[in-house]
Image: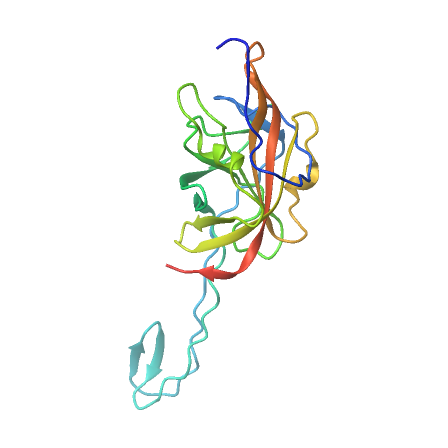
Amino acid sequence: MSGSRTVSSGRGWSLVLGVVGAVLVLVGTLLLVRPQVVGARPFEVATPTSPAGPAVLVGDAEYRAGEVPAAVAVAPLSPVPPGRLEFPSVGVDAEVVPVGVLPSGDLQLPEDPARVGWWAGGALPGESRGTVVLAGHMDGLRRSGAMSALLSVEENDVVRVEDLRGRVHEYRVVARRLSPRQSLDPALFATDGSHRLVLITCGGTFDADAGRYTDNIVVVAEPVLTERRP
């Protein structure tokens, strides 16, 4: 590829939040972080105390013969990692895979632009605090990437994240910014504070000589209160 080509930053926006990091190219990296592997956490079923007598099973709890089962207290399912990302407004649905960091400290993205990386050091969908960070390539050598959807999403658009249990967590876009890749805001990767979703890809003008885009696109979305279950 030679010369330069310009990637539109999408429809009209009031852009907030700065972005930097190394460019998201085919083997690209994004930012300096130290990952923390975050896995599924078990859920518990409370079993009521029973008097003496033959035991029978009702659902997941044990009761004695002649006893009327009381309500079973079931702890809410704990959050688990994301498995898919969907942009309903633009018809994009992509697989999400966990990513760590390179020895350099840079976040490594999936080589396949059709996939999106979830920073395993960040929050899980459905948690009450922290940022869920999803990042991916704008494109590859011959096709657009899943995160090219960030060119088209608008404020108030819904973004859906399906976790590995099949629960769908909805977020609503509140901001987007196209910024020079050298000015990444560390606050985007906060592990505390209000829960939110941050989506990152490269954008702006493609510099053919350097083999990378000049900017990054960051979209911020906040959780919708309702949660869809399978």
